[in-house]
Every structure is written in structure tokens, then in C-alpha cells.
Length: 461
Image (tube, rainbow, N blue to C red; front, side):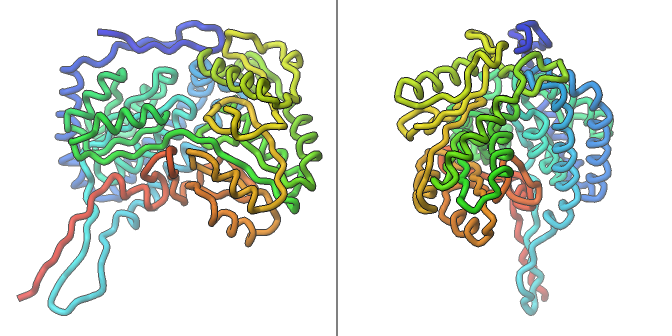
């Protein structure tokens, strides 16, 4: 039996180690989950909501411990680490609040002599495979709706943030969820694939890389389990000539650099109208220079290490590719002395004179780097923004809401932002197109993937 180990990017020391669940343990967890779910589905939505509200309260009660623990696991600066629980609470409470309406039967127009309606039944057992970059936020997107809909849940969390899975289990136990209904299991890739392929799982909610998403689909093939995939992104921003320049600079740079750029919907490429291009670049460079790269446990640090050295090496490779192909780098790594080759500590970077032949403009970099290109029109911006195999979000900076809607309508993306970026509104569906994946979480639509329709057609005699 192997172990799953979390190595801190701060100093390379081990943070946590857990043995991978055995085949017998996985089988027992599935059996217990199915037994618990058979009873849980009978609990009225209001009753589930009361318990799930206690689940949220229990998680928030651990905030003081969660912040530094998260920093040690994945390197997010301590000044920001616990803030993730704010988004966790917003999403969880919203999905709890809308459950009664979202799960209500669908009733077609009345028909004389018949009672007709479509009931939303739980699918059964939901497997949530969560990533490390926003480990509480990404997991809660699926865990809370799945349980509110009457399902059982098994959570498999990423090795880099393995203690988050433990926190979810602690909160579930403290809330009084029926035994076996929610279970955190320590699984490797092989065990996860076997569980999916076994046919025991009814829905898989996965957030991660494109290749891992393909592996999930291969494992699910022939089981008829539904699959929700939130995969890679190369999210663009377009700054129109009429934009509030400083607001656009502040929002784009934060959207690109926060969490060391390790955001599913972080800004990775920027298109700026030629009339304000030079001013935008100058302002963006000035702002990026103010980041403090260093020990994330230091309150002064605003840019921590990337989660793993291999991730930093990918970013360095993209940077080198851009420079070799003629891009201009605007930030001197010497200004960030913590930046050292071979380590996860990596300076931010802004490139100009870029094009879509460069990795920083066409492949997911997932680091604190952006390329900025001038454009002459909305049409040119639309063409470039759509020139990607990904489509998670797109941000438009303008004072003209009509223009934002018109441009957004032409964009191949899951979410259109105006004057903001890198945010999930729980009232809206979180979804993507192209290689970014399939399915949706959050909003009332987020309940559709964890339920199945059951029609009642009752003829009166």
C-alpha cells in the first residue's frame, strides 16, 4: 500500500502523509454510502438544509487553523489564505438557499384528466475529484449541491492539499451528516480510475487538467455515469478605448497574479485598444513591480511560491519560449531576489511584442505571467480572444454595457465578465466550452448534473 504525501513548496518539507485507501476500504465506503443515501433521499430538502448549514458553520469555525495550514500546503500567502473560506461560505449558503426551488417538480401546463410532473431525483453516488489551487472553493461547488439533492458523496482531494479533504470530513461529522453519507477517501490516480470504472459511481465531478479529464472520461466509458469536467483555461481580457484605465489595470493584474497565477479563470492574455495600449502597459508594469515575492508565512508577502517546482519550470519554459520568439520582458527578475531557478519561487512577468505562436499566448501557463497585445477594433479583439482551444471566462473592460454584451455574444466562452475577472458568482452557472470541459456547477443549473428526471403521468379514472 502506497502513501499520498504533501510536500510544502515553502521549504520542501513534508506537511502530511496518508496511506492510500485499500480496495476493501473503498468497497466498504461505497457500500456505506449507498445505504446512507437510500435513507438520506427521504429527508425533506428543509431537513437537509439544516444539516448542511451546520456543515458550513463547522467549516468556518476552523478558519483560524485552515489559513496557515493551507499556506503550508500550497504556498498561498498567509494574508490571503483564509480568505478562500469567504467564497466557500458564499457558494455553499447560496446553493442551500436555492435548493428548495431548484429541486421542485417541474409541472407542464394543466391537462384535463391528468396529473403530470417531472420530479428531480438524486443520481445516487457522486464522486468529487478536487484540485489543489482553490481546494475549498472547487470542492464545495459540487459537494454541497450533491448532498442537498439527496446524494451520497465520496471526495477525493489532490495530494498537494490533502488536509482539505480531512477538513471536509471533520465538518461533515460535526454537522451530523448520516454516517457513510459523506466520505473523504485518500486515493491515487489508479484507485480513482478503478472506482469510476467499477460502475459504482453515478456522477463524477472533476476539476483539473485536460489530460486528466480525458483519463476520467476513459475510466467512465461504458458505465453510463455522467461526467462534469472543468479543465484548462487561457482566459483573455480585452480593454477597450473607453475603459476606466486604472480600474482595468488593477483588475487585470490582480486577475493574472493572484495565487501566483494558479487560477482556473485567471487572466493569461490581454488585448488592449491601441489608443490606450502604451499607458496600459506602463501602468501594468508599475503595478506588477510592487508585488513582494517571498515566504508566504510572512504577512508582507503578496506573491508566494508556486505549488510545486515542476509547475514553476513550466512557466519558465513558456517565458523562455516567448523571449526566443521575440517577446519583450518588462520585469527584471533581480527585483524579486527570492526568484531562484529550480525552486517554486518565481517572479511575475509581463510580455509585449507577443503573438499566438508563443506558448504564453496559446497554452495554459498557470503562473504569474501575461502577454499583452494591441488591437485596433472590437472585431480584432474578438478574433484573437476566440483563437484558443480553451473557453472558461473572458473579461471585457468598457463603460458601454451594450458593447460588452455584443462582444460577449460573439465570444466562445463559458462566462463573460464586464469590468471584473477571476470570480465565480454562485447565482450563475460555472461552465466552459471547447477543451475547458463540459457540464455546469453552481446556480440552479448546478443541480441538474446531480439529479435525474423522473416523469409522473397519472390518468384519472
